[in-house]
Image (cartoon, rainbow, N blue to C red; front, side):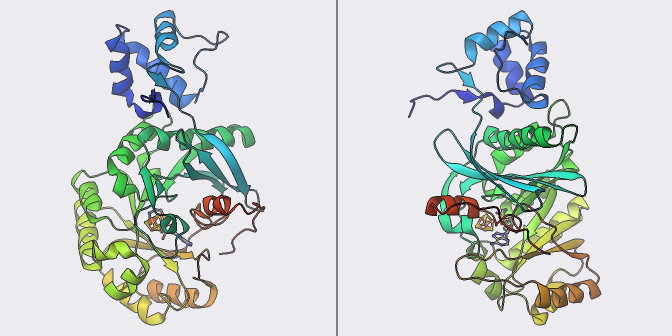
Length: 368
Ligand code: SAH
Ligand code: SF4
């Protein structure tokens, strides 16, 4: 490995780009053109003689960006892709500079296009039903590695549906976003910048397993993004059997943090509930969940389990009774539409497949 790999331009916010230029005596107003090229146009080649920048900026790029120079673009390489049988979902396996691979998903339902991004290589939280959790933690992603996933998905969308915009983003790929909160927030600043990619903050959802300090920070900063909390259990015992991180941040602490978040921000919280046969899908659990969330502006998303290592889920029967109980208690409760995680195999499953070297086939669509 290189001793000092170049820094990715995608890691830099607008102010960072402006000061990188200023450091070499290039006027900061050129930052706009470079930002536009990087994030609005998604250019990967900044040295194309047929499409040059103004001379001072082009000279800076020629001197500073590229192999062996201070900066590069560090675009990940697509090493695999699977599509749902209806063709509406594509999952990409992307290889990063150090050889780590991560998953990114592009979904298009009801005319809306959503990208599901990863925030870490692996995950430290170890949820027992999650293929990523079973791989363990490798490393955090840098902001630019999160931004680059969005650019990749947008490039593919442009090829398959020219003219369609990528308007929504969910952090429901590999990794725990609030365990990597600084890079996640920097990446989201870049992704939501209207001069560039411009995905609206209210169209961005951060999904967390319940990292309480991160939820508290989102509340204190009145973060503009939507919060989704993966709950999966209605008692300490039920939850910690599925989500080991619950031993560190108990259900009681988590619900208190959610209440406080709701009160301070006035925002609705989305609770994710992966239905697992015989573990968390009984009517008693549904009643306890309704009591637990009492007074919180909550929307509950039921996720049919993608079977992994010994766990199975058949959302249909128990799931519908579960849904009915929550609805009767007054909560909006839906089965999650096909999203990154539950479509085209769950989170981490493409990478896990690749590691096992099994051939990747077109997978049947999930029926909700
Ligand atoms: N770490 C974050 C975000 C990534 S996981 C979190 O846990 O919220 C995104 C969602 O996928 C979570 O709700 C998680 O519980 C769910 N998930 C993970 N493995 C799954 C599987 N095998 N089947 C269904 N949902 C799964
Ligand atoms: Fe990590 Fe989320 Fe998977 Fe749990 S469900 S192991 S927090 S990625």
